[in-house]
Image 1 (spheres, one colour):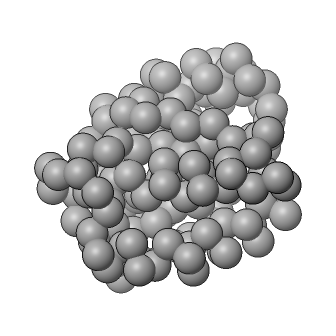
Image 2: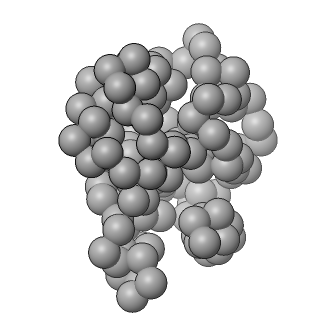
Length: 146
């Protein structure tokens, strides 16, 4: 399962939604894509527990990288890679949602495809810089999910 996270109200915070929505339109991935818009840590955890399937979580993430860069990593590395001082615009961060799901018994493989945002300020639509990176990010996500 490939899960797009984010919100359409914070510019590049929508990158997970945009990437997974794009994949959903492709025959090879359409049946395994889900969007969780504005999902907080508790929603992520409860969804993981309900699905009980391996997942790739796609989200904007503050990882101290250059804007537009991405990383693909195991959820076990999430608390180290994602900035501990970072709080998601949709509640507690992704790392906390993964930790909560694990504590409650989620035992499937979970990976994160994190993209360093350019701008998370309020507003709709990806920044032009992030929009120009979508084809490259989509190709990288496809490769990571195969």
